[in-house]
Length: 512
Image 1 (cartoon, helix red, strand yellow):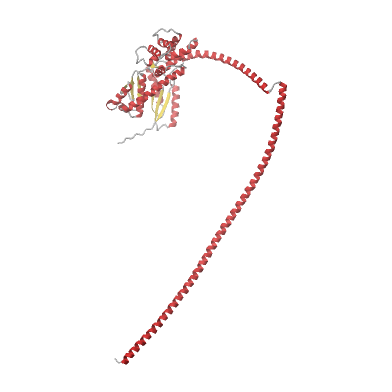
Image 2 (image 1 turned 180 degrees about the vertical axis):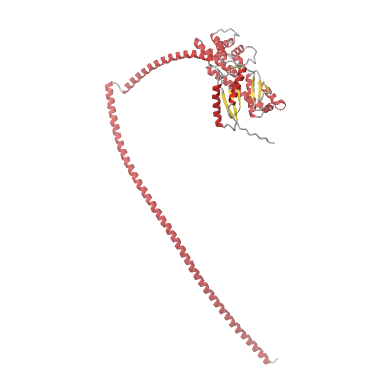
């Protein structure tokens, strides 16, 4: 290649380079200008949008401010209204208080005026009283104290006279009444007394809720019945009698303890040797307490004091002893009354007669333990416990074991005869007795709703089992009254009959 061509080529390259440079520069400036124009448009558009947004925000803020101001103005208006209303109420109350205060002040002034007036009147009355008192003292010639003493003396004299007259009249009336009552008491005690009594027996019957209980009483291989008989000393007879077992023994106290023990065991349901022993001990203690109380009550009722505690205990045992159907403790109390009444009539020692009458049958409480007539047994016991010779003699002679040598002994013997011979004292015919109990049961069973009726305590109580679906608790009371009224109308009986209505619901389930 020639140099010219090279130079031309270099010049062409330089021109191309310079041309390219200017072209690139021109195109870059154009692009830059175009970009600047675009950015300016964007900025202007952003400014316009910002202005619009600003205007919208301002408008919204103005609306919110307007709403807030309106709400605040409304609330302020309501508060101003409430304040005005409260101010009016306060003004009214102040006005009412002012009015009441004015009235109180007016009344206070009126009260002060009245108090002043009363003070003046009191002073005037005091002056008048003093003046009249002085005038009365001058007229009577006596001072106030002297007049009081004179009045008291006259009243005392009048009262003494009245008391003397009243005492004389009362003594006379009491004397006449006592004589009349003494005659009436003797006759009424013989003719009208009908004490509660049961047939003389050595057995007690215990009713069972069902015949299933008999097997539980006997126990496995008879261990329960053996434990019971060994503890109580009473024979327990279980035979074909439906729903009943029999306790047999000569000791009435032991028999009563055994009866109560068996009843409690049946009620408790747990019949076993350990339980039998536990209940027997508790029942024995209860019966001993009852015996002591019965003896103390008999002594208290008859007014006999100073009896030895052991004698009172033996006396209380007579509560469970009967003689031909007559309760011996009641009989002893009755003899004490009769002997005392007759002693008063004859003017002898009433206290001694009562004491001997109350203790005359002591021997019957222990005659199954000691050999001999009960009169001599009782007299010997009384001697050992330091009773007086007269009382012991009356006891031993009331059945002619020895001849009576004192008036009191004769009176005790007579009282014993009167008490035993009075109507109703001794047992009734067995056939009549059974018939009376059957009539009592049949009468109760005729009433609607009655399931079964049982005459107990020798006919002194009727226990009625009712159907709980037919009779409710409220109707039980009416039924008891109706049956009692029917008994009074249709039957004849000594003493009184207790009507007991029993309503019971039972639910039985078995765990298998």
